[in-house]
Image (cartoon, rainbow, N blue to C red; front, side):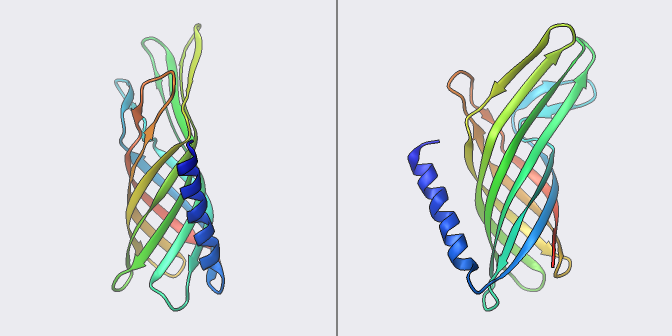
Length: 189
């Protein structure tokens, strides 16, 4: 990662910690299904897309008591895999998304948000029975996200999130890992 991206991420995290003073900080757990990105493997049953499928994460939600703006910082695990028969094998993709988002509460339970996504250690693996596995490791990647959310209660929410991100490597072609996801989350009191 270049120094400008690291400096920008550091400034965002510093701002988050400063806004946490005198705010309501709650642990949060999120899970989602994500679709999109370059098609890496096609089978007659399922395809493997670079945007992943399953995402589980946890972190903190920060709400200032006198503002309609809230923040969320999470670290997660995103992965997908497929098996195939001809030739016999399997393939998978995974990463560790570190996400920071700012949300603005609209009328009622609605909210919109935008943020940054930093995917750590993106990795793609392709295995053939009897031949072994090939693993492609990509550089850490910085992208952005937008989200619509709906607060079901003070503790539970759901959302639709779009993330734009590419995985780069010095030795491999760039792959588009952008995705659209449907998520649910729980704030723990």
